[in-house]
Length: 203
Image (cartoon, rainbow, N blue to C red; front, side):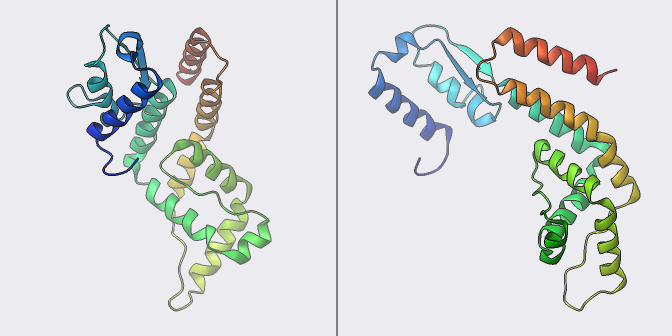
């Protein structure tokens, strides 16, 4: 894909690809599945919208269930305590990943945290496993700062409480997401899995 990643360019690329593979595709294409990005789903200029204008039959739009789940969980997690705990957590993971002596001592490097909650689960596991050593190491750096050297981000006690409190929910969501990604699963299996997750999440 060259040039700007606009819906117009993507649509032209898809049309060219489909036409080369199967010229009469506008007569046969029945549905399209995408994530929920506006670039794909916009009702005026979205890729799917533009693609469906070329179809001879009404098409069916399917919004990827794992992506829906990802967006909902991301929104809920970022709203906890106004999201104030997210930045300190991210900053601390960046600092810990750069501490080579600590990495060698613990035998593993702190997972890289991104804006995806699946990665957050790995960060929480790491913090729980090495909590005492991490706190001792950070306290030493705070008490004996070195000029021009990086200092670990201070996290409030409540930030730690939030991390450990959301751990069970993150584990359950990750398991549900893993099941959703199984290519052999039928739609009714995924619906049952989602209903079970919702039921357990609200208990």
